[in-house]
Image 1 (cartoon, rainbow, N blue to C red):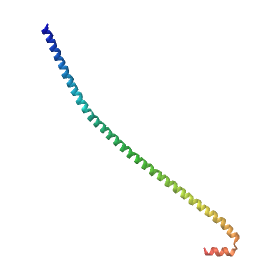
Image 2 (image 1 turned 135 degrees about the horizontal axis):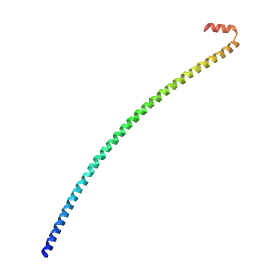
Image 3 (image 1 turned 60 degrees about the horizontal axis):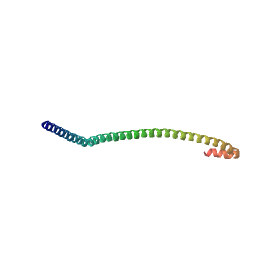
Image 4 (image 1 turned 30 degrees about the vertical axis):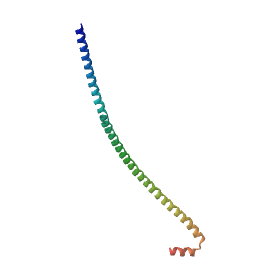
Length: 124
């Protein structure tokens, strides 16, 4: 019985040694995986960052282009409106001048003698 007990003790000791070796190998594998994780995550983070920065630059360029197109469109519309306002103003000024000339002309004729009117017409 003592031999049997010794054999069981040796078997138990061998099993515990195997478990210890397996635990050490598991710990080593976990350490290697843990060390590799930051590098892999860092590479992914940098790739994601580069993609986001590229997208930001593309969006900025598109926005600048859209603003430039809108600016040119607005400038063209403003120029057209300004030209319309200017031509309309000149037309109204010309109309006011003709009305003023007509009114002043009739008043001038009524106040001046005929001889002064004829002299003025000859000089002009």
